[in-house]
Image 1 (cartoon, helix red, strand yellow):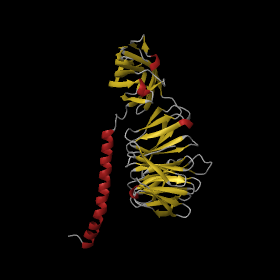
Image 2 (cartoon, helix red, strand yellow; image 1 turned 180 degrees about the horizontal axis):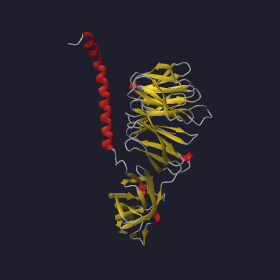
Image 3 (cartoon, rainbow, N blue to C red; image 1 turned 90 degrees about the vertical axis):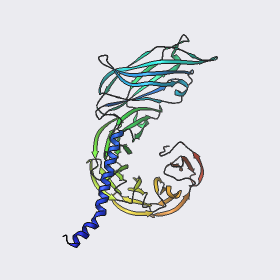
Image 4 (cartoon, one colour; image 1 turned 180 degrees about the vertical axis):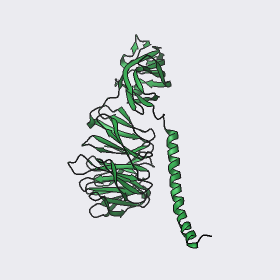
Length: 434
């Protein structure tokens, strides 16, 4: 028979044990789900085939792709994708489209073979069928390493793709992924596909893709070193990307923290090339600090419950964390990585917009914005909204633009923090840039 105090102590520990088991169970389930939705075997390569038009005012021509294959150096055809894939010149003139995400074996390829099944053109009397050149070969040297993602851009000239008025012979070329001017690049993390899309703003096209670890979410840019840090939530790692060469040069493991989601970069000084990454962990209610020089975890800082967003002010040397469940804002002093203040805000704060000498905390649960003074360490004003805010930016002469994710809308505020209007957007708007 056990002594009573042992039974009592064991019984008191049961809730903690159950909580830990639950966490491990949830993490295991999440990992299994990630493995199930992983789009390709671990050592395969991925080719993202994009198509764009070279004509801004093309004829109304459409065609159907029946099959896409990659041709090896020795002439073998490796099946990549089956059709039908419908392409219309007028639709394509509006912007680039993704034809297919193709999974193939790593190796060297000398080009892409595209099977065509039909084509037509609109004439005065209606649509007319065109005879089709059934097999189109686009020569381009493509070299793929294991687990690599690469973009191949196909450029189609519809103005010069119909011969003698009845024969469809598409004028098309292929171009493999090449780096662009880094000042023109925009990076997008694709959480469900495990790669980063690289967009050239001048071309308004996807020009590259970079494979990272499972479930990439938040990103931070060190512009001094041209490095991009990507938080891979399910893998609990950070991918370090060279933005000049568009490849992963290092992976940093996160040995602490559960469910890392977002990050900011704080340079050690205004002229320093290195600094620290501050990463919020949703399930363990803390922030992990990682040195970019040592590539190691330096410290873990407890914050509020269910941290949802993070922002930084390099001039004030402070990091700000919105905590969704505890309804407060944590201010971290980066000189010693300590909590300088916990400021109560309204219900379910989901986003932070840094402003001049103020912070805008977006409270989804109370349909308003708390205006926080980082100097006074308190809320100085509250802005009422008609929809629940989640993310936003401050741009264009100090105006606020707020994405209301669950309401599918965007709210505009003036430079005086007065709401001017709310408009409908697409489904679930979550991020903004301007």
